[in-house]
Length: 296
Image 1 (cartoon, rainbow, N blue to C red):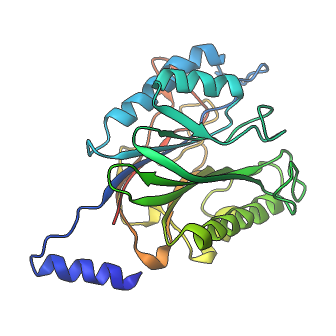
Image 2 (tube, rainbow, N blue to C red; image 1 turned 120 degrees about the horizontal axis):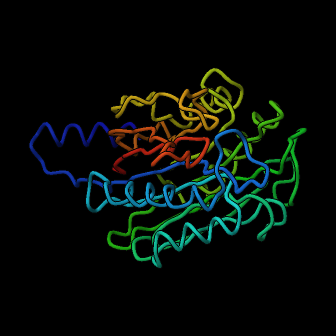
């Protein structure tokens, strides 16, 4: 709430010690599914896997606060890739989310990864971005089934709770992107009504740049703030996220959002678009987005 932010500011000016809050590092990465028919400059998953996992491990280890809670939202993850990534990160890591084509292991996942020794899962759901979100389904002319995965987490050490959502919007249908993000927001707000008020973060590949359909649809709600527009410091020189396995990037379609914007629950400090070219190999056709925030 606005009052919350005002009180924190007044306490700080008066020299009253305010709790530092819970530092979060939020990572979003479309890792590129393990394709059998590959694009120019695309290497097999077996070649891409070591660099991608090492980049994730470095991002986890290099969080600006040693006590930072890490939440990872991935897109285009097949079941075997998910197993590889969790194995590479180590035993405390688990995930929520299922294959989008059967609600089990078929098709791409949009998993949310977290550490079970740091966070307790309070609630989770996966909904399809369609007029029938409780059923395995396509929506509005989409080229693929699309989902949103939502989790409510409790920080074990402090009892602090927050929500994270992860999605991947359609690459074919503009209507599916715009209507899909509406479904995602409606589900986030429904979970808020049951478990909130909570701070919310959202990761995802929108297949929509900031001038495009889905981005504009979400921005127009005023519900969440995108890191780029938050006043946070942008680290590094990369400004775009989709590269198409090229050193010349194409567009910015991968995002970290936070909110609710009207409640000032987060302080956004910095973000970066990491390279997708590691040791001479494109580990994906997207760059990872790494964002650092504090849950107040």
